[in-house]
Image (cartoon, rainbow, N blue to C red; front, side, top):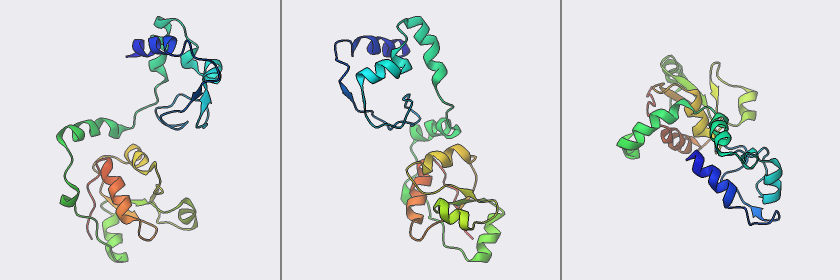
Length: 181
């Protein structure tokens, strides 16, 4: 596939002018992106000048270099492969965690990890000691999967009514251990 990518890069854009607008499939800075900045658009001329993918004309050199640019894959990527093959449990088969009293929450903390999904500001203003700050946002599930070991029981601190979305995002990366009080 690396060789095919090189051939495509060398031939597909060959006849297009430098003014050709480019719209990426992912935003700059994504795990899949090789762009240097956070720009949402570019031109072919800019990419010809700045993008290392377009600067290596020799196929052998490209096939040695390109795989070295891949970022580390989050550990959950590898366990998700098996889960995706077998299919996850249905959402209605997985009980949502109940609201807990402070005493129940303290007891459950000894058996799990607290994920604080509130905003950074709220976390900074005060949080439970040892809680992992992972604000609910587009990257929530990726960061959860990257930072938390697979079978860790999870407890959540959320802003208001965001618990259903936190649970849905948590399930996307295979975390189903949501302890009860």
